[in-house]
Length: 88
Image (cartoon, rainbow, N blue to C red):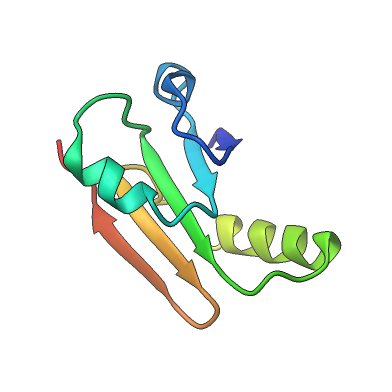
């Protein structure tokens, strides 16, 4: 699995077949309103900001906990993961 961490919605994520990881809450509206520049999968982290080391550990643990990120808009919260299929 290839991952791209970015706060914007880059066209290159789709071209490079990367899962997009973001903290930007506006992505949900953008993703479902437009069919352009869609990444294969999007992970929106909605967790409290902690130290960079703790954040990296949480991100890695979450990413490695599943293999079905592609094709979904996933919202990662402190105590749950919500996955919504991306429009085709």
